Image 1 (cartoon, helix red, strand yellow):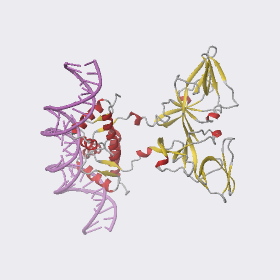
Image 2 (spheres, chains in turn blue, yellow, green, cyan):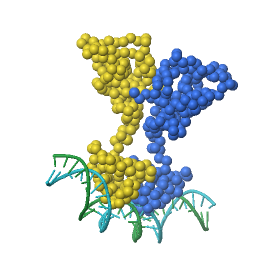
Image 3 (spheres, protein in one colour):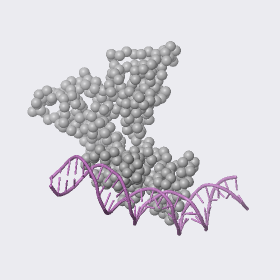
Image 4 (cartoon, chains in turn cyan, yellow, brown, purple):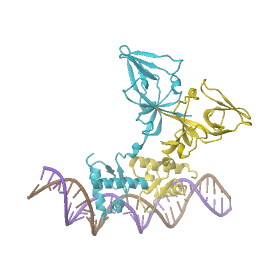
Amino acid sequence: MKDITPQQQKVLDCIQVYINKTGFPPTRADICRELGFKSPNSAETHLRALEKKGFISIESGASRGISINNPEITHLENEYPIVGLVAAGSPTLASENVEKILNCPKNFFGSDFDYFLRVRGLSMKDAGIMEDDLIAVKKTQEIKNGDIVIARIEDEVTVKYFQRSAPNIVHLKPANEEFSDIEVNLEETELYIEGKSVGLIRES
Amino acid sequence: MKDITPQQQKVLDCIQVYINKTGFPPTRADICRELGFKSPNSAETHLRALEKKGFISIESGASRGISINNPEITHLENEYPIVGLVAAGSPTLASENVEKILNCPKNFFGSDFDYFLRVRGLSMKDAGIMEDDLIAVKKTQEIKNGDIVIARIEDEVTVKYFQRSAPNIVHLKPANEEFSDIEVNLEETELYIEGKSVGLIRES
DNA sequence: AATTATACTATATATTTATACAGTATAATG
DNA sequence: CATTATACTGTATAAATATATAGTATAATT
């Protein structure tokens, strides 16, 4: 995406505002009216420049055939997949694992996140994580002791508290007396941290 | 908003899909092409019907001047107050009790709701409701046994399970062994049900 | 000094588009 | 049984619109 000139930015803003206001893009004449141009060709040349620089697309021959490439509005309310906790294998974002798409503001939980994980079982009951709750998962390897992590140990995926007891020893601790700690020796067993929980939603 | 016919729904969907795909609304001819009509007037009459019923707006004289009146989209991210659980008195929406405003899609929890209540204490711990969680509260008097209610008993507000044991006896049951049941005799004690929990959010 | 990009006015026109008018047919409603 | 809403085809046309062409002027690059 090349540099935009101030005047071209004005035209681009004008298009966005027009779409927000009316629901459809402006004509050349509309742009002239908004920005005070006296010739439709003023708008035309700006549009061609914006198209050449990749900011907009113009459908040839169509009236009002302007569309903005990468409008920030599409990121404003984002769509997040709800992923089921598959017994074997990581929860992937492959479509067969996506249960539903949930519309959720981007910074709903203060921090970024990547998807929702549907919780199975009650191993984190005492942490207030119940069956069918949705955990907002941030894919990251930056884990601190005490974080609730989504971890894969040899094809099994679980949600647990993370605690590193020694350089090579990690404890995955449930929050339920009926479940027991999992001690992982990193030299013997492969542990993959999918990410950590940054929030929770319960639809009751 | 009046009833939409299946054919009108098709036309409405077609408009939405067209906008999603191209960034601008379709012409009558575009709709005909998409839906197999052979006369632009087929589209025209459907559009007029949709306009009359309030589903779309049509800018007279403008090409592609169709916009979808989607009240759900404008309500998609709505502003909901987060209310603190005040020891005495109901949680009111008066500004001094509003801790923050949270942006949340309207039908985020499947059902409507009115505000978020910041939870204090652990009396509903075993129901997965922890300190500082946000309960989505729907103001309603329609309560079933087993619902989690926000109740006021003589100036004290609590979150508990609701159970009507007899016509005049209501039990407010905590979900934590360390707390005890509250039995309310409606003939002796005033019980006001503020609403019920329809969802939960945890920002961790 | 020549070229290129930007930033316009002004005019013209083929094409696109909205929209009215004239019909046909069917199902639902009062 | 008359009326109204739905669901179309087919034709016509005024108005809306994209877009080309012909200029002028300025600032930035090469």
